[in-house]
Length: 358
Length: 63
Image (cartoon, rainbow over all chains, first blue to last red; front, side, top):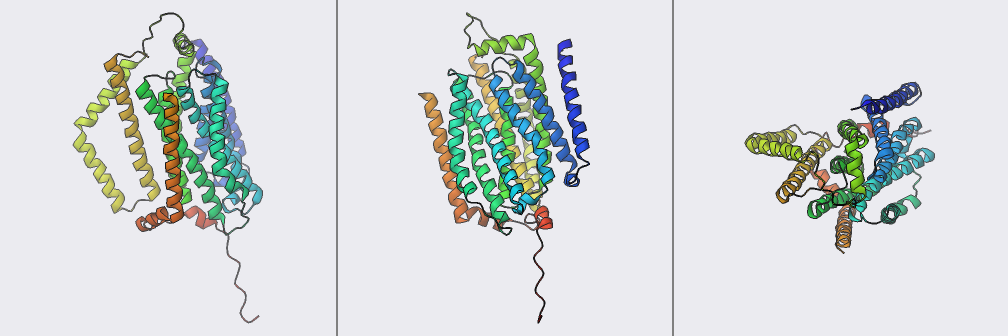
């Protein structure tokens, strides 16, 4: 950390404190009484992530478009607290205008979320084509799919209080179908990275891992809204932990991007190794290998202990009739984390064996 | 060529998932499976129940 880094961080903290003051002031307005502490916490973290993504997007020589997309996503998400002030009439289709606002903001935010993930996949697969063509390809694919999914429901509006369940579940059914696309996108990203031995730069794989967890929680949230088994609070705990993880990750990425080494390495990646015969040695590879090895050995040595813990957890869920939303999230998170660990382990073992320095 | 194979295989998997989900949803398979496995705590959606609009009062008998 040099003086420059402190300057940037102090500037970001100033913006962040201004936002917190704005939120505190807006808590005096009507409708704020329904907001829980963790929702408040979530808005603050989303804005913190937004600041990081903008800072990285300004300086990153290789992955600028990815972070511009992410900053648009988090900007839109940080604006979502305006939804609070329209009350909760939108849930029942009571107030046409409130419902329309809710519907379109929800559709747009899910579109941007899916766009971010699909863009990273397209950038990885078609790395040699120009950026505007990558944007066009991603937007084209996503526009066609979202029009096919959303249009029939948007054009047939139902103006009845009794049909609020149908309105909301249709909306969540559509976003669920779009989120499946981004989940598949992340899985195919992993497969492509593993098979082709290429990568987009430092921290992008980790970013995809955290987006994988976000997509899983989004999918479960959508399912819970379609089939009515929602417990809102728990979802916020998962969202907040993921937001903390992403903010730590982005902080590290920001420090790396603003360092000389980061600038050099990422600009080499951006030029696709065209600056003569420069051998690139991966950063932190041995550390990553070591951390994964330790984790693998720990899991292997404690296998009976961990297995019995999982069985006990299963029996506990069955015996105490824990809510389905909790169970779904727990199972999906355990599965998601296992997939991420297995993927990283396989990737680094392969790279270590083949001495691939990418 | 390989890139397009990735994209095409992804779109085939996606289409299959969408068709399967829509079929299961229309036939009510997911809902039935959900109902049979549900417990007393799951079906309660406190937020929705607490905020449901009240039904209109019944008409007085006999005028």
